[in-house]
Structures are given as structure tokens and as C-alpha cells.
Image 1 (tube, rainbow, N blue to C red):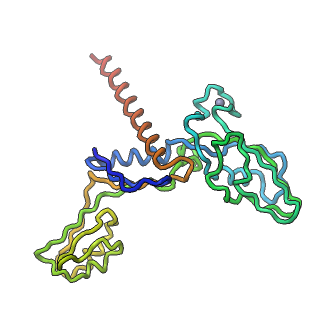
Image 2 (cartoon, rainbow, N blue to C red):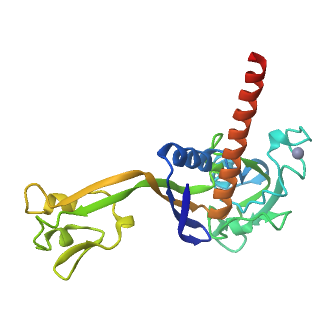
Image 3 (tube, rainbow, N blue to C red):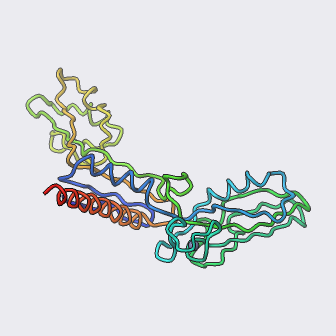
Length: 274
Ligand SMILES: [Zn+2]
């Protein structure tokens, strides 16, 4: 297996996985979506809420705010030694909020949440939670915990985790007269004319839409588009709580642990049989 990184910037990573298979890429994709843990608000205790929204609706909105995640300092509540429903400092971070609209209508933003741990905070301070009318007040305490997308989508650390097959575009030079029709038909501009010959300049951007094949005046078409399912172009974008690289590394770690577990269990079974 080979990996070639095309782009790696904070919240997004794009790489080519070659000599691999869709099954392996899909295993990684599914783990990123549903098994890599991240932080989200889980419990909210309201002390005062005179707003127009009920407690449950506000709690739901709070749960969907992406939070920065520190995977080294926190453990999943079900794996924590405290075994407490409310959690402890190893399995939860506490946020408080107290806002009253005294001088007119006021919007409460994610940035108004005050966390007890400086490593945990909203990814953006500009996410609106609620609008308060004059004299309305909101006061609560909320617990953020680690969780996985398997349990609730609010714990899904990625906005995009997808792969596509490597496109394979061939021009039949015996039939092609470089009429440029396919060049103009391509919505991704990946075909060009160089010295009266059609060349593929950026096959990675191809979306396999077949517009070039359909546009070619030759019958059958002088352009042939297929794909290589052993080479996959992976696109990953995190919601900001973890960087895309952290999500990728954690997903490979989880996949490795699963593979080791299978090997161990098979070895035990094999041992019993012999
Ligand atoms: Zn705990």
C-alpha cells in the first residue's frame, strides 16, 4: 500500500491510497464517521430559563456546537473508572452560561459558554444559541463528554469522509482529430490541447461524469473513461474539534486495534483446535 498526500491543511486532508482496496478505504471511512471520539455537550442543568425556547430545544442546540477535543486528557464515560452517571474530571468538562438581556434584545452565542478547562471550547464563538428579549434570562450548567458518531451524530468529528476511484482517461489517438469538443464539454477542465493532441492534465479532479465521452463526435467515442479500484482518492474534512490529521491517525489506530483483536481471537481458537 502506498499513500501520497495531495493536501494537508488544518481541517482538511486529501490523499491517494494506492495498491489498496475499496474495502480498506471504506473501513477507514466508517471508523472516522462513527468510532473516532470527540467532545459534545451531553447534559444540561437549567437554573433559569425565561426565554421563548424550552429547555430541551436549547439543550439540543448546545449538543450540536462543535467543541475542541483533547483526546489525551479525557476518556469515554463508559471507560472511566468513576462509573458515575454525572461523570468526573476525567470524563467530562463543565461549561456555565449566565446571560440576561437588560438593555434590549440580545443574542446568546457559543462564545458565551465558559468552560472550566481551557483546552475545551467551541470551535467557533459565533454560533447563535438563542435570542433573548428584554428582561429574559438564561442560566445553566452543561457537561461536555466524549462520545462517538455511532451513538449520536453530534459526536461525529468529520463533515466529509469520502473516497472515489482513480479515474483512468484514455484518448484513442488513431481516432481523435483534436476537435476540442471534449475539452469544452469537461466541467472540470481536465482536458487540454497540446500540439494538436488532447492530453489529460489533471485526472484526480475527474468526477467520472462521462461528458467528454458523450460529447465526442466520433462513434464509438475516441475518449475512454474507466477507473482503477485499487487506487483511491480520499477526501477528509473535520468539523474543527480535532484536526483532519488527528481524525485520520485515530481511525488507523482503532482499525489496527480491531485487526489485532481478530488475530488474537483466531490464535486462541486455533490453539484450542490443535
Ligand atoms: Zn469519570
